[in-house]
Amino acid sequence: GFAAFGDDLDAFREAARATDPEKADSFELGMKSQFLDNRVRFNLTGFYVKYKDLQKQLNVPIVVNGQPNQVTLFVNAASATVKGIEAELSATPVEGLTLRGVLGYQDGKYNSYTAANAGYDLASAPLDRAPKWQWTLDGVYSVPIGDYKLTLNANAAYTGRNLNTQAIDDPLGNTFLNARTLVNGSITLSQIDDKYYLRLVGKNLTDKRYRVGIQNVAGLWLNSQYGPPRYFGLEAGLSLGSKR
Image (cartoon, rainbow, N blue to C red):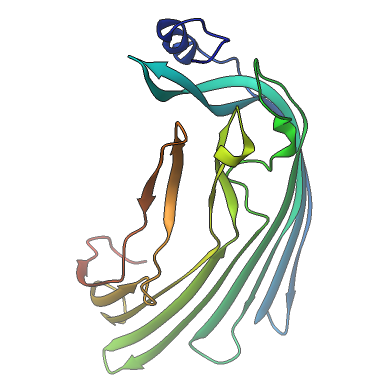
């Protein structure tokens, strides 16, 4: 079992214990700009966040009825600093076409991270669910067709590799979500005033197989949840609101 608890019941009591509030001091500095008769816009923001009493999720091994298992604890165990930038660029190069890109970078590190009976320096792990890089590219093109308009949309979104869950006894028990790029698109036929529309939607067009959650269960197996596979759908809509 896990010596810090003494028996299984103590482990589950500890898991049910409430955490204290998490505190953060956050600072942002940014700029917004427009060029070429507002056809091009560029926004840039830098941020700095310092956390105290950071609420953390820990997977702790225990023995239940003689079998290895684990319990998930939520504790105020750490302080951390996160800094980074967010940049956004949008452009309308020709009538009806809008291009947009968003880029995000963050660097997060623990200042301290302590927990009872930790088997290694917990602060040596990266912050969980905090990928260093994320970006999105999006394009929309609309063209009138009589009393209707046809709108084409395509976008791609990237998320970098990131820690998903952290083990307390061994860093080999930490689980990571792999980097992924998802591609989506749609074709919409609508009235000029958007009162009615018919839309063909495609999601995860490259049929990427990717995890959205993964957990190492007592070092015995991995419990994974996957994102949806490639999907095509047809939507029809009606707007009841009046336009002014």
